[in-house]
Amino acid sequence: MITECTLTVRTYECDSYGHVNNANYLNYLEYARYDFLKTVGFDYPAAIKAGYGVYVARVEIDYKKPALTDEVLTIRSWPVKKGAVSGIIAQEIKRGGDLIAQAKVTWAFVDSKGQPAKIPPEWDLPGLKP
Image (cartoon, rainbow, N blue to C red; front, side, top):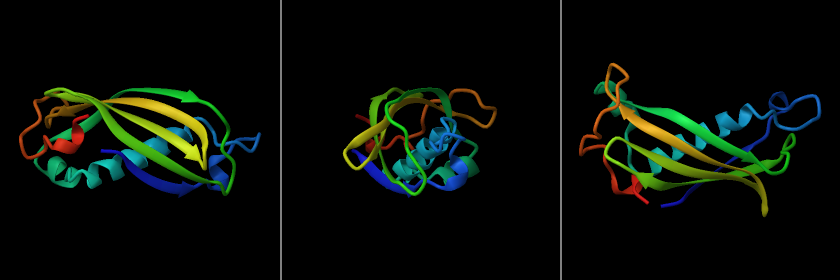
């Protein structure tokens, strides 16, 4: 499953060159991953309430072109790998047809102590699998 969401670049996200500061792409990707989880039916607040979490273990980002204030960006997210405890979500940020950045985010399901844990059946959803 591929999900898409959009956002508009805000002035305070840009650096002195007028480009989105590279650190802000992490926020964009996080926003889109949360949207991805909701779309596939993963109830993140319920998982937290039950003592679980989904931690980011690794982020790989390739920056291709700058994004500027007031531009509308589309972020696509989809699963590329899924194991019993962790997985990888691929993401791309586009402005129209232009690829702005692409990323691979490795995540891990954890228990209340922050230790890796096998994903319980209620959160091991088909949409998390490639």
